[in-house]
Amino acid sequence: MIALLLSVAAFISTLSGGLTGLRNKDKLHRFLGYTAGVLIGVVAFDLLPEIFKILTATHKTATWPMIALVCGFLVFHIVEKSILIHRTNETDYGPHHHPHVGVASALALSGHSFLDGVGIGLGFKASSTIGIAVAIAVIAHDFTDGLNTVNLMLLNKNRSAKALAFLILDALAPILGVLSTLLFSISSNGLTLYLGFFAGFLLYIGASEILPEAHSEHSSYQTIALTIIGALFIFIVTRFA
Image: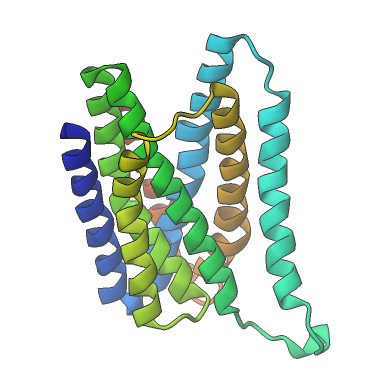
């Protein structure tokens, strides 16, 4: 019951972050700069340390998780560029975007939020202390998850109503993740592969998608500072977690 209540808090946190992004569309480039820093911070200070922690505990090598990381990076790169390759010539493109890329990104982030909920549920199965610690970390960064979901949808020219729909999906995902732990568990090997794959995905959209867009028309020291603040925010959150 406690795990489910905490997942509802994660729902509220995610929804609040996304609504903040929707209300400030005119400042999207600043949010994008912050979002890029957050995504890079999640990879460096959350996902990779968790992978190495599990590998140390299970006495496994990092080879397969790192292969999964490269696959995550390349899969999203291939998906995105395949969308861009159509009948027109390269010179006809210009700086435009494709809604399907935003949808793919939002779905991936919702999948991550679902596994955040799984983490809360499995944490409580281990002990109340672990469950609460995981939940605090999830709730703390879910505000940014909601913001990221909306930013990626708007960045790729999706309508606000559609961005809101995917935001609600992302907000519900932790609750569904907690409920799913009543039905199954995940092995440590499977978890490291997932975390590696998702780390590669985040690296791609953070460095190749969001950062260039944040500076495409509004490059400034303020945007650079917001990127640094985003990374520092995740560093602080993971230290408390």
